[in-house]
Image 1 (cartoon, rainbow, N blue to C red):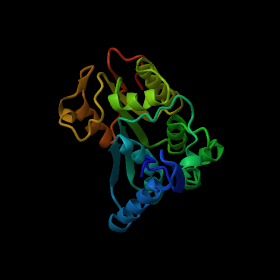
Image 2 (cartoon, helix red, strand yellow; image 1 turned 45 degrees about the vertical axis):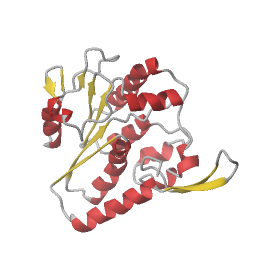
Image 3 (tube, rainbow, N blue to C red; image 1 turned 135 degrees about the vertical axis):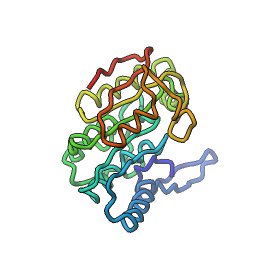
Image 4 (cartoon, rainbow, N blue to C red; image 1 turned 60 degrees about the vertical axis):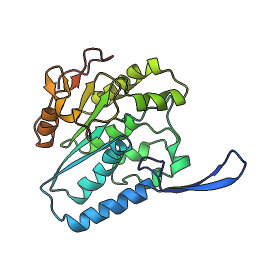
Length: 235
């Protein structure tokens, strides 16, 4: 509903013709309905792999704390595919989407959130700090064409995107030792639904193998392309 699984609000916009239109930003409401369906049909899964590409990348980390809360005995792994959710400045998403009211109230870090200065880095760090035994991860390409489009729509240049993405990922690494990342070169958006899932290789690490190890609970290295702006280091 245009809010990348964060919304629980009805927002009135004005069209170019000067008319008013209501948009139901109910992304989180819809996500929660899907989760409740899962709860009813999967009573005690041994493990959970939460992933999604593009907007679904945000959906996977958005759903993660709710899945862990519902299934405390299940091992959960989260992998976001191709959306660092970058803005040229922190976003006032609560004002638009009503996101603050749907944040997990059992995670202390969210109480400190400025609802009008949201960043995905802060979201990841809050969740990862509260669940230090859980592994969280992201895959991105350094010049992802879709992410670059949103980056430039916010007033930035395409040339500044790789450094901005690297900075956001590095900021999560700095505070969350249970976070892993795989950064590839190029500008392709999303890998999970693509045949390149099986063939993408960076620094001698095949992405398919990296995901398999991640999903089975094995530790994986942080992988970055040779041209990457920032070296994320080896955990």
